[in-house]
Image (tube, rainbow, N blue to C red; front, side, top):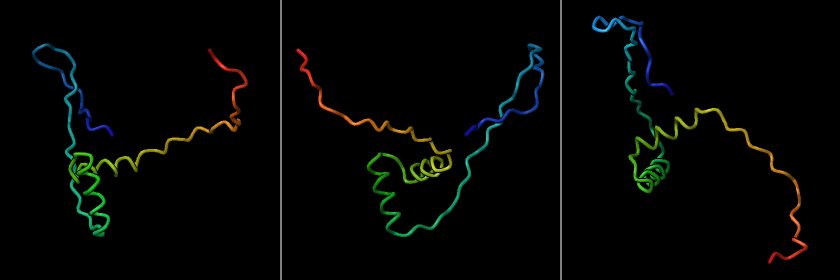
Length: 87
């Protein structure tokens, strides 16, 4: 997620160079209602990872919006024991 958006180009009057002024988007707040068991699991995981519940929830939501990583097919080669010993 790109948190920086650039505004219109402007000329810096001091050095007469073209500069882009960064415009930052502030995070948005949401309120959700969770079943007690879900809340307890999230809080337990957040505590175990040493992070806040809010940070864990944001991470999980952002992760769920990423495109799925394609699984690489595993070779269907049977493992067989080595016939010789190594010294």
